[in-house]
Amino acid sequence: MTQPLPRLGKQFGALFTASSLSNLADGVLSVGIGLVAINMTTSPTLISLAAAAFTLPWLLFGMYSGVIIDRSDRRRIILIATAVRIASLATIAVALAGGFLNYPILLALIFIFGTCEVFADNAYTVLIPAIVPTSRLAAANSRLLSAQQVTNNFLGAPASGLLFAIGAAWTFGVPAALCAAAFFIIRVGLRGNFRPEITAEKSGGKTRKTADLKQGVAYLFRHPVFRPLVLASAAQNMVFTGYFSIFILWVVGPESRLKLAEAHYGMLFTLLAVGSICGAFIVEKLLTRFHEIRVLGASWLIATLLLIVPLVLPHLVAIAIMLFMSGMCNTIGNTVSMTLRQRLIPSALLGRVFGAAQTINLGLIPFGTLLAGFIAQFAGMPAWFISATVLATAAVLLAIRAVPPSAIPPAVPAAASPTPGADAGLPDALPIHDSPAAVFHADPPSGA
Image (cartoon, rainbow, N blue to C red):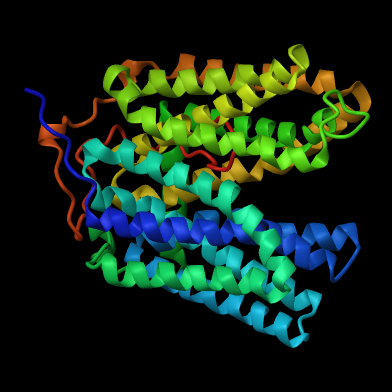
């Protein structure tokens, strides 16, 4: 008789709700920052700085955040980072309402908010294995990823335009309130000590932190399984970001191939979120029938092959299906990769490995945008569609070839899966040769 799966638990419910509220705030800000910025300056350089200030902290502090998180109580990191985010957003809202916000202050506060987001998001991910039974990690991760898609694409972005129409201050005031609600939920609903046991030892100083950072990076690159997965993920993120940064030129406007109206473009991309939700519903079932690495490889391969669809089938229905499938594959692939990382990496190293991998992932993204623009400008959009498909597919095939299923130890059966407690800071029971895990940028429409 099949044993029933253990429940995800109330602590996961608190983390899920708080994470969803934080992501909803991010969704509002992703559009709201630009709306506020263009009312303060028309300089393309300054406008781009506002977007960069929001994302640059991942490149600057991604690895360092992992060191801090691996030496601290992960719950406390979330609370501190969220408190600073609330303060920065509330300051912008008050300054907008009072009419004394200038552009340098806006950039500085956005940068502070983005820096706190690095620490909070890293800590959220690292905290999951401490509160969720090992056999339900895939379910927990898929729920978080699908909620991220819904809050960012379905709710956050449209809400931002409505809030800005009411008043610019609301564009930052409402996210501040959402972050405050997330703070309260974590504070009340997620109690306990979530500090890895290794950090209880007295250690400190710049030298020690540098050594910790090097250990995390070395841990990531020395493992023959997860090294190719991380590199393939980074290559895919680079290609996918560049691909969709100029995708609008192919489908929108009277001179485009599809001649789609601008007002319909955003509606078309909601299919990414729909696909993501569907992927969240089926990923756990897929993992009960197929090996994790098979599911990961299949989702990657399908996502990369879909890149050629707009060129060979330049029709609205075909592109709609392509976006839906991309969202589904994105959630499935991200869920498997996150689950592998959380299941196989000792808790005391999880933050550093995640931070290092995210830095690699995000560090290559600007190169993908530049590459897409260069090829499309001088060789045409079809040449870029072909190049993107070839590059991404090659990265996937190399990773699949380098990581056979036999290299991944099986997950703990449901019946034997322990239910973590608040003090679950011990290394996991299934380390594989100091195995770092693959980390993939969760933003759509990446297939990594």
